[in-house]
Image (cartoon, rainbow, N blue to C red; front, top):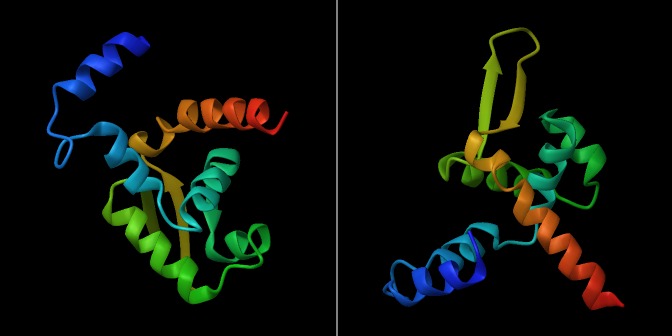
Length: 115
């Protein structure tokens, strides 16, 4: 989709309710959301402890709540194995995987901005 098409699409939406840019920003809001999504983009599947190793500054409570929020929004899958000890793995849904180009473009923009 070209910039002109996106601009037209945004013009034709109710900015209070349907703005796709605002919805995307809302989805990515939160200090830890992008870090968690990025970790899953880079690793495909992670367990809770692996998130803690990769993002050591996040608390257990914040990691747990952010994972639940992303699961509710349809961005990540949670797969629980009924084993002893219990094993839970997290991965991206197709909607989550589709965010890779967004992260790539944000990275390009950030590199140019930092110059």
